[in-house]
Amino acid sequence: MLTIKPRAEDVEGQPILRPLPSAKCRSVGPFVFFDHMLETTYAPGTGMNIRQHPHIGLSTLTYLFEGRLLHKDSLGSDQQVDAGEVSWMTSGAAIAHIERTPDDLLASGSRMHGLQIWLASPKAFESGAGHYNHHPASSLPVSDEMGIRIRMIAGSGFCLTSPVPVLSPTLYAELHMQTATTLLIPTEHAERALYVLSGEASLDGEAVETRSLIVLDAGQEVTLCAQSECHAVLIGGAALDGPRRMNWNFVASDPALIETARQRWAAGDWPTVSGETGRIELP
Image (tube, rainbow, N blue to C red; front, side, top):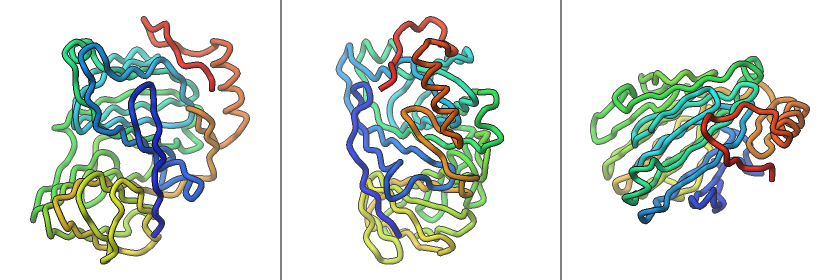
């Protein structure tokens, strides 16, 4: 097993922990980027505001444990996303979007806690059309037995299949485990990793470092044991169909696609989000 300690970052005022990408591990299944948006209290008049920015070659998935966000994109999507819901955006060749605290929570003050991850698109889809899907919490399948609650956020596993339209074999499950419960993590997906958000846990008797990404050995079943009430996510899937390059918000199998995207965004030759004037410039 490989332990990846995340680096602390700040995204437009929102503190995060980012274990992927890492020099030790560039991807786990289709997952190439993993942001843990840390528990944050926003005073009245303040909130998260990720201004208009571009993507290529990936899908973003935002999943909140606490709070609410407004998602708008260049496809015309305008969607409020509550805790427990899935906001899924596939960029295709070019898309722009914003995510911010809605006006009512901006006025009252709010709490924020969640995850945003990126999944690299298979080569056949990375230059295709973009699309957006919103999935309410009630649409996500849940198993709740013997003190272990599993919610399938995206993909499939543990006899559950999410309605989120993933583009390759994917595993993205939220786990809630009561003290002293155990869960066998099978090998149905070629690549897997565990991220414990809170609580104490072990894998095959070895203590797990909370808020680090634990990449599991391929082809090996492992047993996750909760030493206390434990909240975690399990990610994985089939290996990517070739290496990916990442540059800022762009993911591609061909570096030329990234260079073209950089030039287009810098020149303003990009789809825009209706009603939005602010944007994040190239770093």
